[in-house]
Image (tube, one colour):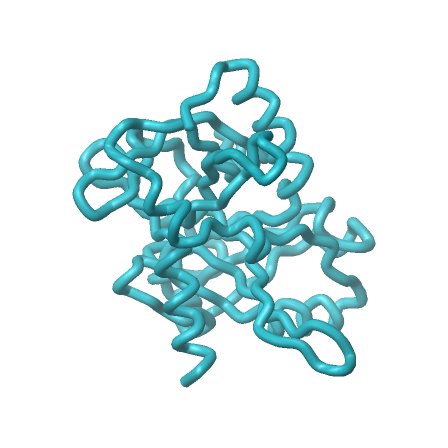
Length: 244
């Protein structure tokens, strides 16, 4: 769906409100105190996998681009809005042997981290997470992904940018996505910090109004744009891992 500018601006505002606390900054380097080698974004994704007498059972993952995790040392940054109390965000989560903390899905260009260790980190330090997640209901099903064609449509990338002062501001930008051969791609190259971020499109919802659908994960730039690891393939890959 290609939207007018006023509608795009409204969706940017809505996206920041609904999912601004779904994303975290990721930094990869050669070791503590060394210059960052890569900067990117990761986001929380939760999917229902069943139900018990005690309620629904969900798996929660932190998703990002695999290329961001190929460093000896990494940090997952914290923001005051995602920790309770806010002081929990004073120090990042430091992860020596960064690649070992992720499940790698190289066929998708994706890395996924089960979030049990992140919750344990918070418990050990006396705070708790206060996040939003991209849920299974928002993640684009296969038919939504299939509807992306060669004609560009409005897309929205929610990321933590890279300020010159080292800050990682929350940013939502309006872009275009289109299908190029077998790939769905963001058609322009994004700023630093955006690799690993979720990218959204809009389609008509059940009530006729616009409904956000998360197409997938922004991968590193290629040929003036960014391939997207789409959720039709992400779902299948994570389901296979859980089954195994």
